[in-house]
Image (cartoon, rainbow, N blue to C red; front, side, top):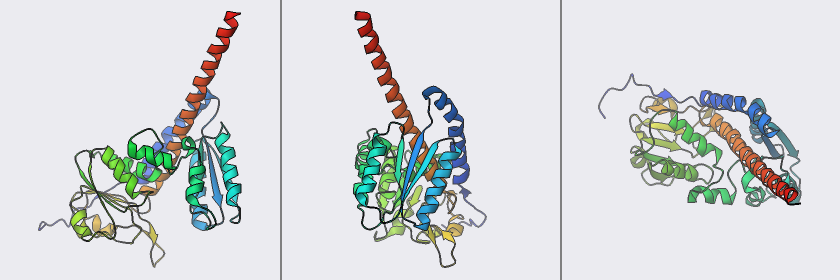
Amino acid sequence: MNEDNSDHMAQIIDGKALATRIREKMKDRIPQLEAQYGRRPSLYVILVGEDPGSRIYVRNKINAATSVGMDARLIHFDDDVSESDLLNLIHVLNEDPLVDGILVQLPLPAHMNEERVVDAIAKDKDVDGFHALNVGALWQGTHGITPCTPKGIIQLIMSTGIPIAGKIAVVVGRSNIVGKPVAKLLLDENATVIITHTRTPDLKAMTTQADILVVAVGKERLITADMIKPGAVVIDVGITRNADGKLVGDVDFEAARKVAGYITPVPGGVGPLTIAMLLKNTMECFLNHAETHSRVSKLWTTIINARIGSK
């Protein structure tokens, strides 16, 4: 590439603004749902221990849910709580018909088995989308709850107005939380998907093919400007604190802006959409529960009326 692109600057994909629009729509809709079903969507967030990062994440989730009119509650355990006590609480919440979403903030203390705890949450209340049955539903293309961050990434890409279908999408990162599920969602949108990672021999050869580049590794400035195809949509999921204490992503943002067509900032890109998708998942769980309850109630009314009429 020999052309002078010194004046080119990528458009910033503003995750905060997009998340705000999504939340405003929910805020307008919830009073209507409460009038229709007699209650609001409810989200229960469980925090174990005093990890500062987890406390901030939980506070942001609770505040976001409350701000749109949801019934959001925090249950906080000391870090020495037993796994069996935590599982017992999850069982109680699973059985409560007024609880729509359950979220256990990760990571958990070392004496707990995270997989066992996550899979204890009812599939239809697993708003994180981490339950094995929801993961299976994602890959089989059946009904389930989609993980929040991958779901938000698709929203960010779509907000550019650039169609995903027919594009080459390269995902850098293979985690179960972001890399693998976002690759599947991109496939569902008819992209041709290449999954790479930090051990890919020639990462640059892969990333420079990408019309859509999603980077989710957690390694500061892993992706430099020369690794980006001119005009590409770049979604930076990574977030780390550098030596100066500043939050930075996996992409060299300032340099990448001179090559990419669209790019997400860090912070302010993927993070706000992750929380917005958590609220969206909670809303979907609520509607599923409310509609199921409504159908059952109508069925019982029909049965009772039929019995009365036969007497």
